[in-house]
Every structure is written in structure tokens, then in C-alpha cells.
Length: 532
Image 1: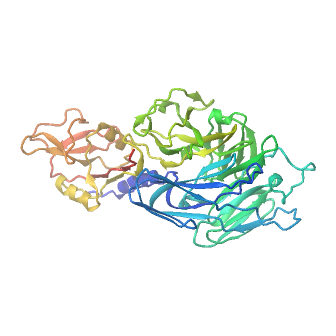
Image 2: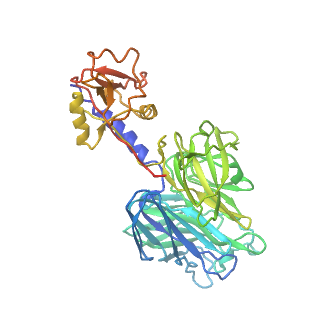
Image 3: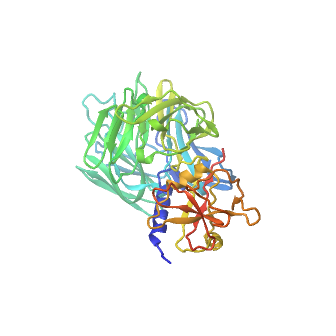
């Protein structure tokens, strides 16, 4: 009996890679609302946390808001309002120095018993900003600081004014979501830093000469670029706020929807450079790529961060449209809930194989998903002619023709070779089933994922009836879609059970075998889907 442990390792590696693709789901989040001056208008802010559950019986706890909400259902969204908001950084009187590391206590911790998606929106008069919240376990320790956008209104002599908020510099907001102190350093031509206690927030002032290039911490932190009252037009200002993604290991490609790129600049930063470029269809970076307009900072998704399922929330109907970027061969297969989307108004991204479309939001909430590919989706709003928006929250990066995956499927070819009946029990010991392939779409989907070098075949969950000789599946589904190899199956007395071929050129075809042959079992657990 040959044992090839590498097969299981290859399968598990693929499975882990799938489950660790980027998404916005988690059980712990830290939310912070930036200072929002709002057109110099003395109205109170409306800061809201929106939580979408992905599983039934989910319990939500929000510290500082005294929220303890039990039994959220899968697909349910609730929102909570707070007046907690960052204040102006604590700057020494008459100071002109930017070396300010101001600590505050306005962070809000959201925890859940099962995976959820969290979004935050800040609204004050006509000043609106929206962002999905990255779960704490997906944060990083190094962030490249994007170039600081130029503000239209500044002091006549060009000097930095730190004590006049609306004419002051942009800020870095750094949040420590952990249970231990985070030591943070702002590095570049100059260097300074400080310690952030658990659950605390630091604000650091930035000028536009680029002396600070990246943030480095000894523990995972969240980083934002923000300005509470950036000048826009007609003596008005509004909040600019964008999440900064953690530094990437390699350069990745970022695709830009044409309609969003109109009259916009792209803020790029990585290990070697910090630049601002005119709008384009695609850029490469290992750091931050942010689209900038006077009222708009939008963090772009890299192709590696594309998802297959997204939460679309109108957020008080403040979100007016969503924008999709997808490969030109994958325009079909997009669904809203259970209904095919059928979008036809696609625009090419010049110099790429991708296309983009934008669609008006006509519903309070929906789930947008692709049955065979991944895509980028951005939520965008507009208030009095000024845009705001950010990526839609990614629920899953695992395409599946059956729906929106919230718990990945388990695929495992066990190491030990046994007879067909014994293989059923081997799968059951791992809380899995000998796989039933009653749908040819499932077979094609799994066949594309299997990597089983050195293994020629594996038992699957079908055999002949001892009474009639007819084939049946262990899960009792109809025996319709078949993938028998040429000339198979043989006569009733030639083989009572079936195997799937794992040879690269056999297209996962089936053969009948003697049920007592020693062969590896193909064990499986289906994914959990979000109810639509």
C-alpha cells in the first residue's frame, strides 16, 4: 500500500489559500469616526455602525454603546448610532511643529460570536464619508503613507498652520485594536513615533513634502488618511477620509473604473516612491492606491483582493450607485440575490482585459455575487454634487455556482487506501462524506481545484443497487449528470462501485471498480451559503 501524504497537503494548501483570500468578514472590529467639521455648520454628527450577520444566531456586542444584541439572523443588517468622534489633535498652543502624536479614546470595539461584516458612515450636514471596516485579524504592521492631496485653500505664504483645523494638514489616524500596547514609528526622511495603548487612537499631522513615507508597528494596527474639513468650493469644506491598506509582499495591479477616474488623480505609494498621477485604467503598486477628487478619497482594490460576493447597503439611501470591474469574459454570471443581473452597459478599461459598469441603487440592501469569477465592487454616493464612497464589503472570494459562500467547502483525499464501504467510515471520522457528484457543475468546479500528484483515482459516493443494478448516489440525489469514461461503466458484474480519475488529462472521468479494491476516498463537506 502506497502512502502519499503530499496529496493531502496539496489539497489542504489549496483549501487554506481559498479561505484566506481577502474579505471583510470577522468576529472583532475596531471602529473610529474621524473629526467631521461639515461646512462650518454647528449641527451634530450622525455616526453609524452597520453590522451584517452571515450566520444565524449571531450575537453582537459593541463596547461604549452598551449594545448586546443576541440572535441576529444570516443576512440581517442592523445599524447603531453614536456621537463618539475624534476631536482635534492635542497640539501645543502656538506650535508650528508637525511632530504631534496625539492619543485619544474614541475607538469603538465591535465583537460577534460568528463572522459578520461591519461598515461605518459619518454624516454631518452635507459632509459624508463611508468605509467598510477591516476586521482586526486582517490588519498589518506596515503601511505606506500615500501622497498628501493638495488643498485648494491654504495660507498665502504656504506655511503649515496646525491650529486652524480647516487650513491645517492632513492626519494619519492609527488605531490599536489589540490587547497589548503597540509601538508605532512614522519613518522616512524624518522619524518619530510613540506608544498606543490597547483600544486607543493616535493622530499624526502630515505635510505635503513627503518626509514621512511609511508606518511601522510591532503589532497589527489600522491606519487611515483623513482631513476633517478639506476645502472644496464656494467657501465650503468637508471630511476626506480613506482607509490605508497594509503593505503588500509584491507589486499588484489596481484597475480603475473609468467613470470614477474622470477628473481624478491617483495617489500611489510603495517602498520606493510616493507619487500622484493622472487618471488611468490600471496602475501597479505594492502599497497604497487611492483615487482622489476634491470631495473624494476612494481606496482601490488590487486584482488579488477581488471578491466573488459583496454586501450592497444603501446606508440610509446615501449610497446612490455601485460600480463593478470584472474580466471581459466574465460579464455574465453576476447575480443580485437569486436573480441574474444581466448588465449590458459595459465600458472597456483601456489596455486591459477588464470592463466596468455602474448601476443605480434601488434597494436598501442586497448581496451581489458571481457564480464563476471574482470582481471589484465600489459603493458610491453623492450629496449636492460631491461624491463619496469606498469598496463594497467583501463577504467571500470563493466563486460558486450555487451562491454566496460564507464557509468554504472542504475537499480532502485521505491518505489510506481502503474498500468503498470502509472509505465511507473513514470520511465520517473526519465529519465528511464520500462525495456525491450528482451535478456536473459541481464536478467541473471541484475538478478545477484538485491537485493530486501521484494519485490516479479516488472513490466517489456512488454504487450499483444490489437489487436492480442501477447506479445511485449516497446523498439520494437523482443519478442524471454523469461523467463516465469511454466504454464505462461495464456490465453489472464487472464493477459495483465507482472511482474518479485524478489523472491530469482524464477530465475527472469515472470508472466502475470492484468495491473491495483498496483505493483512497474522496471526502467532502459542502460550503455554507448566505441565504438570499
